[in-house]
Image 1 (tube, rainbow, N blue to C red):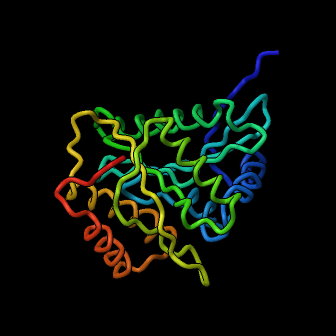
Image 2 (tube, one colour):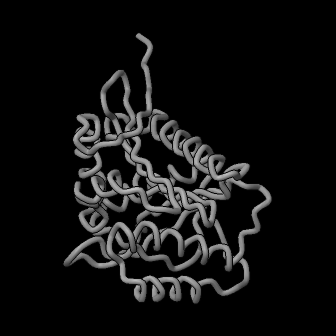
Length: 234
């Protein structure tokens, strides 16, 4: 029997497909990186000006096997993946790549609706393996980095923090990875700061109640960690 892989955009957290995907998501990340169901509901219910937001579920033969979230920011013409996950039993079979490519296609459509030829770049936040608490977590972190590299992403050598996602949770230093989608883009420090500012503003100020003064502090840390006019990527 031929397997049928599909992507479906979710518009309501009460959708049974999202409920199944949420269970996969909760098992895939440590608590400090997880969002509650209410946050996803707020994402779907509100239409913040200046961005498009998507929650995409992956299905194989009608069974939910993964999910991803994607933001597109009009002012910087970039996208940012919040989460992307495929259930353990379906990993390393090409489904994660298919899901990622589907996000790139969604992002391209968002950019074209704003009169652009296409998006400039797609960012992802990925855990740093050196901060893992167990050997198993460390291996998972390394596998995520390997996955993102396999689809064309590179690590930006800069100090990037995910702000706290809730009471009692600390901010987390992460790898900031990027796939440049516009071959004419000049990747310099000024562009990077503007791009990350839009990530903080639209995801963490709006969705996670990050204070503007704290956002400015995170941006300053990032700026100081990039020594030259052009950030290194690897």
